[in-house]
Image 1: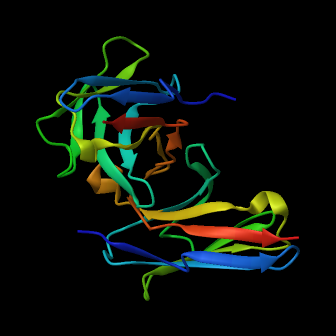
Image 2: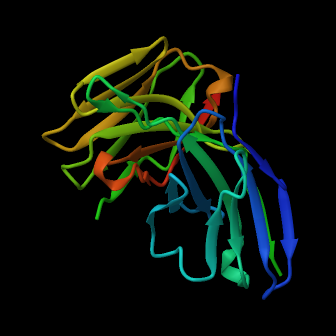
Length: 119
Length: 113
């Protein structure tokens, strides 16, 4: 069964350093997302990406964050200068979003996450 | 914007009994409501979803009900088993919002043997 994969599973970095989190979405999916989950808190939407551009982003997704689809398979989240409060689990997701009989499906499939620890 | 509230935060049931988790949402434009199961150390996995044109959906031991008027939806798990122990999240989405999911806070379900 196809699945979303993420690397690395755990990333430890010093405050102020840049990190890149990588994701390989399911191959025939068109929409890609990043979410984060601070320990013990809700899952929070960061950004959605379609047709090689950002579709929507939340208030969390400020100028320190960027996303890219550098090739046909990878989808990356970059944090330019990490802060302590960026420590969280980061989940990538993808969805097919295929129009079907006038409805648009939105089943999002999640990767296992990358635990980012900023020291 | 949309806000999703989920209750209870922790639910402990005897194996074989039923479990019910409830969510409410604030934006009447929301039209897609998935439920995710998250096991320790793993990403959320979609277990069932419902769209606003349907009132109830069932998949084996799992069912979801939706009351659009009251703006609440519920997850029902019958004949619970130890492997049902996990954190369950409800979410809501509006097609016009590029499918951004707004999440509930999660319910930790504990199945007692």
